[in-house]
Image (cartoon, rainbow, N blue to C red; front, side, top):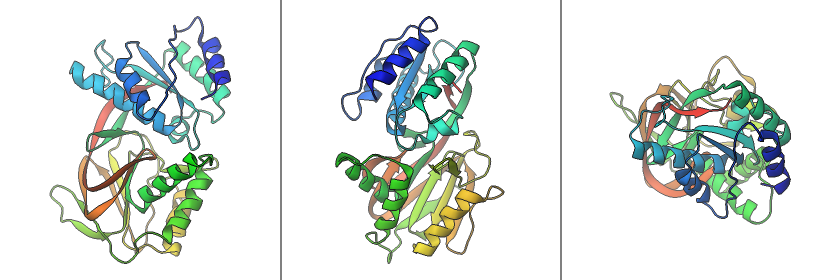
Length: 301
C-alpha cells in the first residue's frame, strides 16, 4: 500500500467519515488491527490476503459479541469497504469495484455517501473464514510457490498464478490421488487430486474475465466444489477454458467433478497436503471441514 493512495483515500473521504489510519507491518497484523477496531466502518486498502485477515478479525469480534451476523444492529459486524491494492483483487472485482485504486476510492465514497451496502455469506474452512475460495492440492501448492516468488521480488498477478500452476504440474504428485470429499447423507467421493471450494464466487480473474466455477456468482448460495480426478495438462487447460468462456453451466468432463450449493462438507487427505484460503497458503493438513455461513458480513458495494 502506497502513501499516495492512503493520502488520496483520506482526502476523498474527508467530511464523510472520520478515519484512523493504520499500516500493516507483518503477516497477521491486519487481523489484529481488525480485532482492535471499534469504528462502524473498516476500509481495507490491500490485496485479497489483507482483506481475508480483516474479515477474520471482524468475525473474531462478532463471536465475542455473540451477535447475529449481518443483522445491522449495534452489536453486529461493522461495514467493510475494499480498495484494491494487490495483484488479483478477486473480492474487489467480484463486488463490482474498478481495479484502479483511485477510481475504486471514488466509487467507495459514492456508495458510503449513499448509505448502500450488501450482505454476503462467507465460507469457513476449519477456523479460518474465506470470502471467495479455498483449495487443497495443486491449487494450494501453486499459491505456496507464488508466495515464494513474491518474497523474491515478483509482482503478484493472475498471469503469474496461471504460469506457476502450469510449472507446478510437473512437480506435483500426479500418480496417487490423496483427497476424499465427504458430505452428510452422501457416499464419499475419493481418488481426487485437487479440490477448489468457492463461495459462489469467481475463483480468480484472467485480465478482465472472471474464472467462474459456477455461473451467476452471488456470495449467497452455499459452497461449490470443483475437483479433478486426474491431473493432465489437457485437463487443466480444459477446465480453465470452461471457467473463462462458458457462462451457462459449471465445467464438466470425464475427469471433473462439480458439487453445488453445499452447506457443509469435509475434504480428507491420505497424506499431509497443501491448503490455501483466499490466495494465502496455510501449510499442510490432512482434513478440513468447510461450512457456509450465510449473511455473515456487510460490505460497501
